[in-house]
Amino acid sequence: MAGYDVIIVGNGPAGLSAALYTSRANLKTLVIGKDQGALAKAERIENYFGMAEPVSGCELVENTKQQAKSLGAALVTDEIFHISWNQGFVLEGREGTYQAVSVLLATGSSRKKADIKGLAELEGRGVSYCAICDAFFFRGRKVAVLGNEEYAVHELGQLLPVAGSAVLLTNGKELLASAPEGVPVITKKITSVNGEEEVAGVTFEDGSSLELDGLFVALGSAGAVDLARKIGALTDGRSIQTDENMATNVPGLYAAGDCTGGLLQISTAVGEGAKAAMSMIKFVRQQKKG
Image 1 (tube, rainbow, N blue to C red):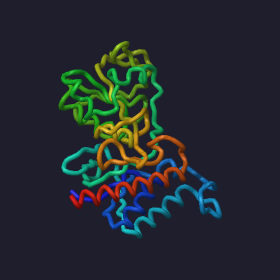
Image 2 (cartoon, rainbow, N blue to C red):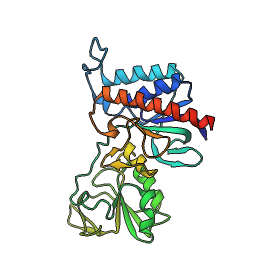
Image 3 (tube, one colour):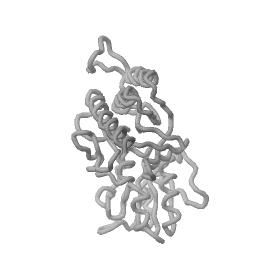
């Protein structure tokens, strides 16, 4: 398992900005990204400092990646599913496992939501966004995972040894990963999550229903907030709570960019990334002295 001083999850403006600073501080830095994120969809950027001519989001990201590499940062393409602590932060991805002294979560804000009646109302009462956090409460009971990609399959893997039974619900979407053997896959669109005090089941568009004790939401990829919850960092809705130094309540874990809420602009993300990097440099150096 490769060890780093700093691992940055997310290769957008916040993550790459942080990588520039940690690399220049001679910290062994790894940036892990799945794709270009929301910035890649920006056709023209005109409101960012130093731009004599508009550039595309893709061009801006690629230029900064090359800058980070030239300073010594390593960049890999992977999808992180889980983060934990074992004498250092351990990050589990599709392609490998990584270890670091300090971690920055900078994957942007989650834009994938399920508009299903009852889902938000039953959050914390049978609807969960973290299998490893809440699997214990569903020992021997019937649960489902909502999602259609690798992240959903990963969450199933956390639930199967504990729950009595589990099913995968794709909510009308094509399954883009391989479900574990023996796990039923239901592709029908969901119209509602049922229950008053706690989850009792779901109803599908064709009028049929499925009884459940719990529903675990794992849409798309694991975002920064999902990863933060898995290791016990405080969140507020779909944002990670940080102090003025971009530190979470978990020592050595930082967050920057859209995942912290606030003004969703490149300039803000770059500034927060730089601030987080300065905090991480100080933290790592203190750990090495100790």
